[in-house]
Image (cartoon, rainbow, N blue to C red; front, side, top):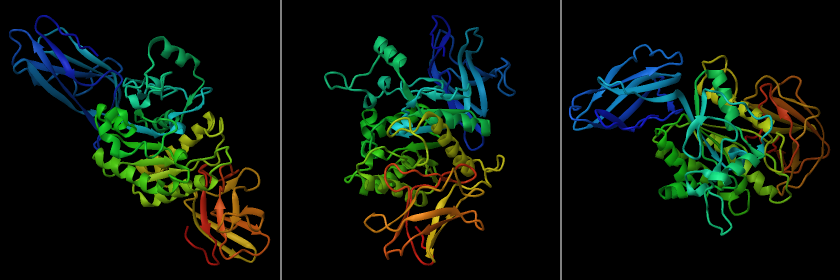
Length: 485
């Protein structure tokens, strides 16, 4: 972006876009660019400020050749370009009437902005090996507040603008890395792949709409640390940082991708998780002045750890419940995915998770593209009924037929205390009903029998539908005629 001021008859641009910025399209599939600045010279007042928009072929877009966007008044000016179509990259050129000096903004896109927020599985802690390749039509507003082509790793908290992300130094004080220390960190980094870039590239492939990502996640953070009540602390709080960054890129986004809950899987925070999560979504929509802002999230997956199994499951069950209570939201399951360490989903399965998220988003927001509107949102438990030694588990939202790699695994029958009761000796998908699983059990069920899928912190679960959408972790009472979860 050119910001140079000239000694004679020149203009300076104070506000406007920056190179590589993605502009959020409006409902009419266009965007606008607002500019303002100052002018110098003895006879510049009442002169026009002119602008044009140039495409990749260096030819002005139809309807966007040189034209006045405003006049200089008292050495100040402002103007805007309206109805810029979805696409790009574009180059915006600005000049003063009669001047040969042109200032430009390069590689601008018009498309959809997505916030990436939550903790480490959204920040990205998978191996930086065979990562998602970048795309010239997927950009990122990095944590140092710079627009550029998105590439792994998207999140680099050590050089973030906002202090809430800074690591602690030897004196236990937050410190932003820069210079040689930052270069050393970047060169030596081995972890950092996430689901944001694979999701964006998948969405671009399906919709042909450019994508801008706003990475805001931070590993190990709880719902309390994301509390909207901390908004006024701005860059010293996670919520305040996210809000500031959204305002910095125009104030409107297409939606939010959220992956968090691991830090709340404990006896103190677990019981309050659902209320805090729902309050967070409500506050985001109010603060962004987008009451129907799409909010998509991941149900937390596996953790190779023996502690707090009940609280881990409590958060997973709360996340499943939230999907039916929060309008314009959706959840994808991750319990069946492979890990790169004890808690972080592996690089390749993050790509798989990203495709699942794209399936859900396309179903809801792009139903007219291909057959996404006809595709279902993924398996959800409806009822579990016991009769003659068999528990029939029925699901809604199944694409095609439920399936598994090898014998079905993940179901267990337990009493109200969580203790295992009769053994399931055989499981299969009902030959006559593609959305029903038959569990053959030995022994009589207790009156308080509960069906679980994904019980514990490290279950082996492998039931998915034909679209590779996984059955989520759930618990459900077992009845004789079927009961809702």
